[in-house]
Length: 159
Image 1 (cartoon, rainbow, N blue to C red):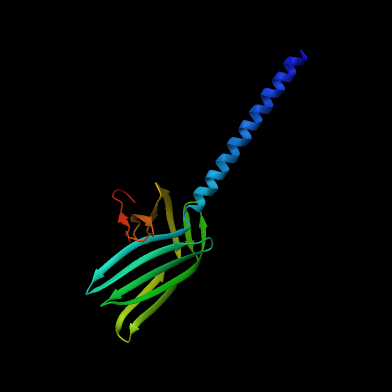
Image 2: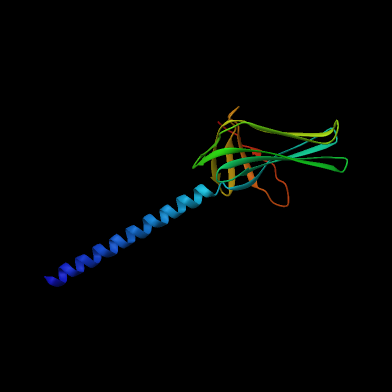
C-alpha cells in the first residue's frame, strides 16, 4: 500500500512538473510574440516627378517613429516623426500626433512626415506585420526593413 501511495505521488509530481513546464513555455511564447512587433518595417514607396519617397515605421517599446527618406537628382533628405505609443498584443496606440519637415534647399526636395494620434490594429503573420489603417480600415502586410526596400502590399478581402 505504501508503494502505491508513493507511486501515485510520483505520478502527481510528474504531472505537476509537466503542467508547470507547459505553462512556462506558453508564457514565453506569448511574450516573444508580443515583442515580435518591435523593429523597423518597410511601409511604402512613392515615385513621381523625379522624386522617390520611402517610408518606414519603427515600433519601439514606448514609441513609434515614422521615417521618410526623400531623394531627387542625387540629393537626399531624411525626416523622422516620433510619438509616444502604448504597444499591446494586437494594438499600437499612438498617443500624440506629430509632424516633421525637412527640405534640401529652399523650395527643393521638401519631405514631410506625420504620425496621427489613434489606434492601429496589427498581427504578426509568418514574420510579416499586418496592420489595419485607422482611417480607411485597409489591411496591409509589411516586411522587416533590410538592405532591399520592400513596400507594404495591400491585402485583399474584408478589412
